[in-house]
Amino acid sequence: MPSVKKPEWLRIGRMDREKIQEVQQLLRKLNLHTVCEESMCPNIGKCFEKKTATFLIMGDICTRNCKFCDIKFGRPEPLDSHEPDHLVKAAKKLGLKHVVITSVTRDDLPDGGASHFAKITEKLREYDENIVIELLIPDLKGKEGDIRKIIESKPDIINHNIEVVPRLFRKVTPQANYERSLKLLKMVKEMDPAIYTKSGLMVGLGETKDEVIELMKDLREAECDILTVGQYLKPPSSDLEIEEFVHPSIFKEYEERAYEMGFQFVASAPFVRSSFNAEEADFLLES
Image (cartoon, rainbow, N blue to C red):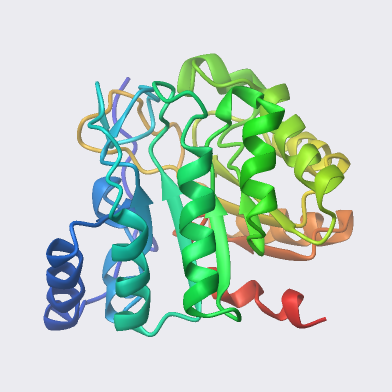
C-alpha cells in the first residue's frame, strides 16, 4: 500500500535544544527512561522544554510486541531497586507538581510490576503529599489482586489506554484484549471511586467514525472519566502503515461527542498523546 502523504497542518514547530539536553542529562544521570524518548513521541521537544517528562519504569524492553510501538521487544533486565528513589529525585529536580509514570509491559514478573508501581507512588507521596500522581498502567493480564496493589497505593489518576477500536485489536495489539481493558478501568472505579480513570485512543488506522463513537460509549459504560484521542504516527521500526491523516475538524467532533457522553475532560487533536499536557485535567482534583 502506498504511504499517505503528511498534510501541511501536521507539523511540529522549533524546539529549544538546550532545555531538551538539560532534561536528557538529568535522566541519564539518574538512569531513568522516558516513554517520550523510547516511543519517539512527537511532543518530546515541547515537554522537555517545559521540564516535564513521562517516566518509563521497569526498563526499556517490553515483553509484548505491539505493532504501533517503537519500544524494544525482548527479555527485560531485572528490576532496579533504586528506581523509586531516582524517580523522586528527578521529580524534585524538575519541580514537578504532576508526575506521569508508565511502564513497559512486564509479563515476566509474577505481579506484572504492580508492586513496583505501588512503591514508586508511596515514595512520591512521602516526598510531597500534594503531588498529582498519574499512572499509565498495562493490563496486568486483568489480575484483580495485582490491580488492587496499585489502587491501594492511592494514585490520583489511573490511565490504561484502549489504543484502538475492537476490530483492529488483533492487527495492532494482538496480545491485548479489548474486554479485559474495559474491565480493568471498571475495576478501578469499583475498588476506589475517588481515583480518576483515563484512557487513550489512536486514530488513522482504518477505523470508522461510528466505531470510534461506539468505543467512547464503551469507555463511559466503564465509568472512564478522561479521554485522549490522537493521530497514529508510524515509528521507524514498525510495518503498521498509516491509513489516514485524520483532519483536525474530526478530532474536534470526537471531543464534542465525548463531552456530550459525560467525559469530564477530553483532549482530542492530531498530536495529542495520553500523557501530553496531562496537568490540564488537574482542575478535576480540586472539585
